[in-house]
Image (cartoon, rainbow, N blue to C red; front, top):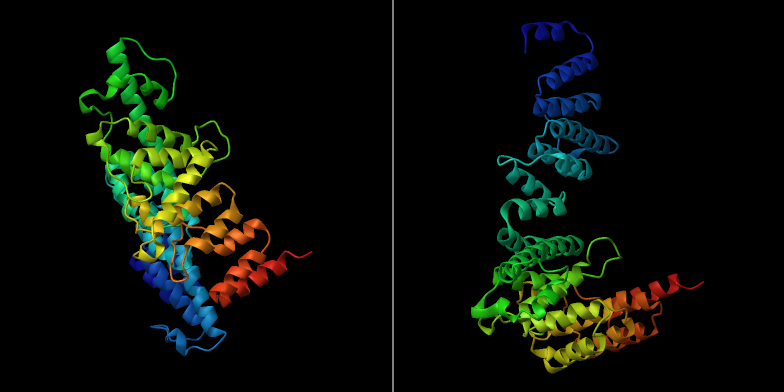
Length: 404
């Protein structure tokens, strides 16, 4: 800063004018970290606290304590917004994180044009910091490829809300389906010397067994197995111009089941037959083969002793590693719930889930099932039988809310 500014500040008699002029100078020179400290100093002056360093918040009395906290948040917001406007995303988030303002950061990240230098920073903030997980996952998938996206899905996505996991699973399914379809079409055109008509992947391969001769395949088989597992998170979406992600998942499973036996990767209970069992599960969610699917997954849940489980959550089944008992019953409960068979799911819960068994966040809870049913008598009975006082109290309160 110029000597003129120093002299100008010295000539001022009002502290407020000193603060305002210095703040403007710091903004002009983009010295935002100093601007932050200046704003804190300004608040201490206003509250008659020592200018050099404020006492610990625990030592302050109200209303000074609250006003000090508010001044800190205002300073974070001001400086964070300045840094955000200049594309300094990591530094901006360091100020905006304490006040929980994700939305402006997410909006700026969406407008940013990733470069080789900025990509890592964008992914870190969007995905690992949870500011815009969908955007972060898209960046990884587009710029780093399927393999890296799968690794990220298994390591990072389970720590985020299920909605974000489902969104990432849909992106992977669409991405892989496009790749497989393009490769199969190219193979057919090469062999038949003409482009095949429009058809699903399953239709294209149904009468062309030669596509899989000599253990041939059209996509990395480990990618296929992983993404088919991830697709269990999908739910049927409202109709739109895009193909249903569940329908695409069925298509991928149908492709996988036609691979040579040596290329068939083993699954975990209740999806040991990896591709046929997943095709059945997805088809049921689309309203097809429903009774067959319910019979199959009910049998899987019955034949495994739930007392012999090792407390691993069904959620890990996305990665193909769930404990016996837990995965089977969770899958059956999830299927019943997604099909709207809430009463059956509640009865299965009572029959197959021992009091000491803890299911993962992916499985429907007893209370949620009762809420979907709209009545709580059976739920309350189960709580009494299990000595679940907290669950019983929650049911009573929920039931009271629904009375006219």
